[in-house]
Image (tube, rainbow, N blue to C red):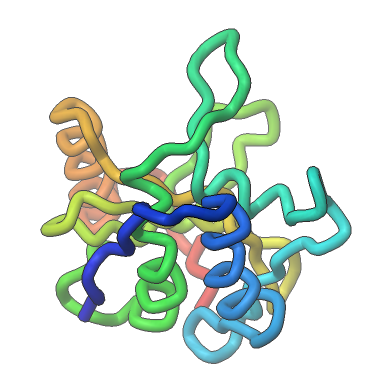
Length: 166
């Protein structure tokens, strides 16, 4: 289902190189979840000439620091569109989760659990959503947390009845 990870051995600006994939998959073309929910690249929110969403897909922020390249995220940027469009693939564990943020947003997690990679979407309106982030799961406690969330959602014990987008 997923291609090989990208090589980050690139002599030019790595962010310009990575942006080619993001632009191809989300700006130049349209990506849909379940063929009905458009993934909005939020082109109106930019930093350094690139969508903020792009920066959340290829960088990581440590507490109290600026965002820096996260090789494990960046080398998997081509996976994101494939995961979204392949959401029904049994190799993905997809679930909704109510966040602890101020708005208590419900987000959709697409977890390629055998590859330790997660894509997170948030609904914008009736037929659109945006990419919150994606990342490589590099801690065992996060794997356990996602497994717990997934099982609670499937068992209908997560308090998320009738929250589905499609």
